[in-house]
Amino acid sequence: MGGPYPSGIHGPDVPHSVTMGSPALGPRSSLYFASLDAAVEGLQQRVQDILRRLNGGREEAHTELSGVRDSLLLKVSELTEQLEERLFHGYGFHNGLIQERLQALSEVLERVEGVQAELRRICCTVEAVYQDLCLQPED
Image (tube, rainbow, N blue to C red; front, top):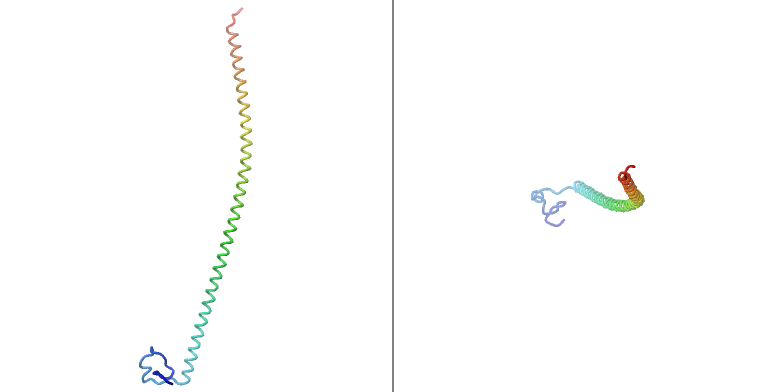
């Protein structure tokens, strides 16, 4: 096999003692290390696949969570609008009752003013009669 390195040894990071003077690996050892390299490579590939699936699952979960959040925001908004409508309806109903009661109170106060005026007239009349009785000479 050509090149500066003995059979089975590759790359410049291999220590000098391995490249110079060390015997080359036998066929069984080479197969073992090749098999080991393939197993490690397979494990690395499986780890990459698992990470890819995990990240994909996270992205899906994030997308679903965003959808749930959007749905909840929409539902909360709808419920808030319904609550506002009910409150405004209730306000309108109670405002109507208050207006009716204020109108009734106003009518009662008008009658009270009329009765007060009549009572004043009666008091004036009684006072005038009393003065007439007191000022008349006794016979």
